[in-house]
Length: 99
Image 1: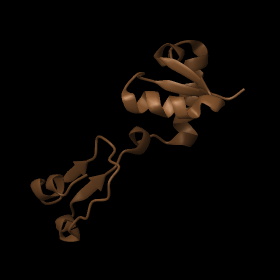
Image 2 (image 1 turned 90 degrees about the vertical axis):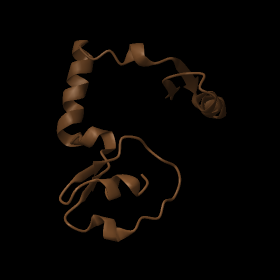
Image 3 (image 1 turned 45 degrees about the vertical axis):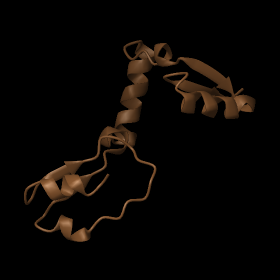
């Protein structure tokens, strides 16, 4: 996240990161003055101990169709191909299968 969102929110406002970045960014910490809040919602701010069992229950019941989201499966030996395909945009949801 760049510094722009923090600079644009009001005092006591909240900036929420909605995508990941893979670069280092320097931020002027004075932008956090006046009770500004920055949220990086890892996993949508889920609570793994509570939410993961619920997700598993929905999956096992058939209400959460995760299998249909998989566009390609890769064996561990083809890990490099999985990364290459991901970076080239060849699949939406590739999965590494451990056998």
